[in-house]
Image (tube, rainbow, N blue to C red):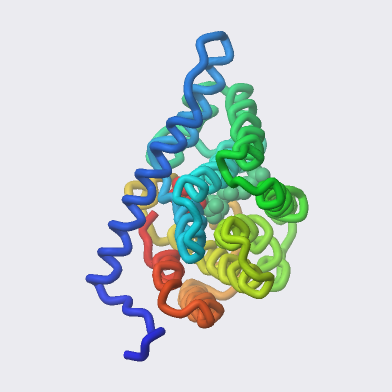
Length: 307
Ligand code: GRG
């Protein structure tokens, strides 16, 4: 095997999954500390924020932040703070996506969604609280000693999560329920809705590490491609897995006539497309050498997970 070829053997994947689990545990501890419960009436919203952000979730986006940052020798606590902030944005998006006004889901991560466990108004506020808090964390000197880096993190995340990214993608997704999309339109929707957050997660490492523009672009690109592969895998899980495996209700896309690569081309072609995307994501990392191997394995994991 050449030095940069990735070993996707069962043993390698098992050790990757253990590493992902360990990272998730550190992210959980960080989130737990960041979301301390207050004593007043506002306690209820923080409880709902904790319900949304703790206990569950693969923490794949934080993993990309932490692994990206480790390639640059960034102080581990900086990476953890940035990773937790980004995960808060992801969790907020899930809470709002599950609301009756959006996807109307009653189950997420194997348990009732936030608006079911609390109520709709509290779920809206919990999402708002997580989103706002994320920017507070990124702008805190505990996340990086350089104010320029902190500002860069905030700016990049605002672009990726806002109307030029995830929020824009969610709007397209809502509109798509009454339109028939072609391949390019589906690709754009998914790139904004899912890809942008993965992209900025991978880029965060290079921002924290004050890397060259070339490396930033490569990591951004890697994250975007990984996000596309991840989304196809998510759509496949929606048709192929049970509630127990996915931790959420499945079969919803087809029931709603939602446009995905699978509705357009069928599962086999979608699966091949996801594999090609993983190869592309791995290829983008070539110049990083072996130090990017965990990121390569993460791309492979994105399409070989069960939830
Ligand atoms: C409400 C602004 C706003 C955006 C919502 C994230 C999102 C946009 C919608 C979620 C719908 C969905 C199923 C998208 C597919 C990809 C995705 C984000 C899956 C969930 O991410 P995982 O699998 O979740 O990483 P865990 O629970 O592991 O964190």
